[in-house]
Amino acid sequence: MKLLFIGDIVGRPGRNIIKENLKNLIEENNVDFVIANGENAAGGNGITKKIAEELFDAGINFFTMGNHVWDNKEIFSFIDTEERIIRPLNYPPGAPGKGSNIIEVKNNLKIGIINISGRTFMQALDCPFRTCAEEIEKINKITNIIVVDFHAEATSEKQAMGWFLDGKVSLVVGTHTHVQTADERILPKGTAYITDVGMTGAYDSILGIDKDEVIKKFLNQLPARFEVASGRAQLNSVLVEIDEITGLAISIKRLNMLK
Ligand code: FE2
Image (cartoon, rainbow, N blue to C red; front, top):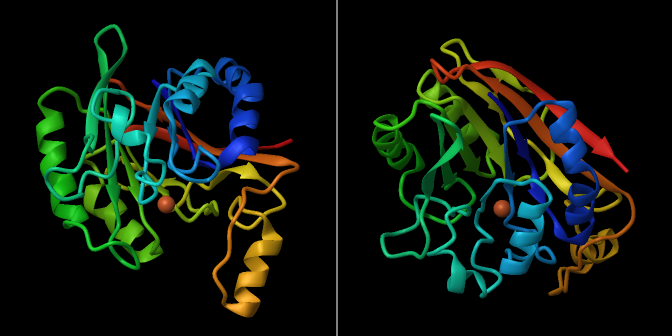
């Protein structure tokens, strides 16, 4: 099967480039399933029901989130019932929503998706390595096609997760830094890996945000109101081919667009 994983969608420029181009990308590349990180989809802060629905209509099948999952309060009203959105698994017990799910891609083909947060330079959540390993054991009873979105800041922590899960999952994809790395590869035991898949949003920006405000904050160190940038948009993603029998990766390639 072919899976497209799209890097963090940031605000309207990110949503628009998806709406205008995703269906073509799916067709051109025979994509079976599309996952996107959606934690910044609504004006840079979280996701709303309406925006999620619009993006499902545009061709996205499933959303992972991250540390901004709770930024738009509306999420609390639908994350418990929406099967197609997950948040980091390693939040404390009792947090709304869930950290993994299993979805039917097509007849007799199921994919397990896990969202997990790093804890180096991030919130002190439960151990991402242990919680992820336990979840994989549970999912393995149903499918061996498993994608892990590791939403983390530190490249070392992300590489460690890739090596830790090599041979146990189909893909370990890093999100959160919004800057795509060029280290996509298949690890020796068959897991596809990239440290960060990048960002889908305004190109002339700082991580998708209006650059003037961010520069000002670096200069004066005062509180600032960040707005999503406008103008040209980029789409960052990886296209991964997965063996449906073994669950291991056959290929991984970065697929990017600038409009
Ligand atoms: Fe994030």
